[in-house]
Amino acid sequence: MKSNFLLLFIVIFSSPLLSCNTTTTPKQHKKMDTAISETMILKEVLPRKKSDLPLSDETAIPFLKTFGKKNPENKVRIETPLGSFDVLLFKNTPYHRANFIFLTKQRYFDNTFFHRVVTDFIIQGGNSDNADTGQKRRKIGKYLLPPDIRKGYKHHRGVISMPSSEIENPHKLASPYEFFIVHQSPGAYHLDESYTVFGKVVRGMEVVDAINALPTDKREWPLTNMRLHVTVLTE
Image 1 (cartoon, rainbow, N blue to C red):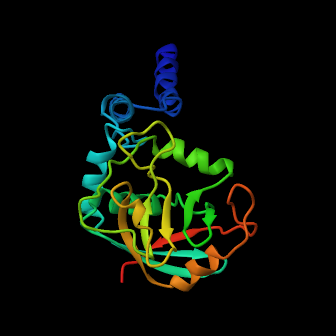
Image 2: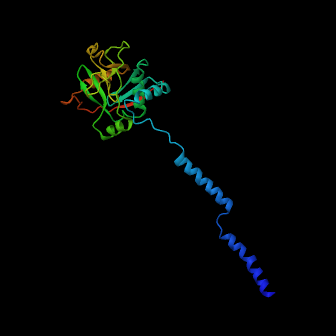
């Protein structure tokens, strides 16, 4: 009888100890299994959103078409050490407008320069000898834009246009990362039909004049660096 009582005592008083050593119940295990399964689904099963970048010759135009519809802005401010000027981008050159707005929102132009100045002709911007510019281009993509020269625009003084790529390029496909502004008066009309005019300076042409007057080295790079900062205007 005494031994039976002792056995009963051990069973009763050992139960809390067993309970304290048990960290999860079967129900808790089920919850944990569910949580783990959901995490695995989110990380491994559900498809990840495919990035549009880097762009290519095949994807650039469809991308810019969609981007242009969602981003209708058509005015930018270009800031330089000599002051700022505003550029109106033409809506009926849609891919060139969208491309410039896209690169501005990607902050591509920040820390690039007006890297080519030809007296009484043009100032050209959008390039740099900094390593981060090349990194930005690799991230955004390698692509060219087709010319859009049938809209009746001419290379009057103050227009913004896009140079063609330096590669073998009989169709004058445009290099999307650079642009030039015509300084020549009344215009540089020999460029018509070869390059796409896609906007014009609407404020601050005196800044363009000041940049064009800068002395340059043999590469036509200004001796005073003209670093750019471009922002989209929503007013």
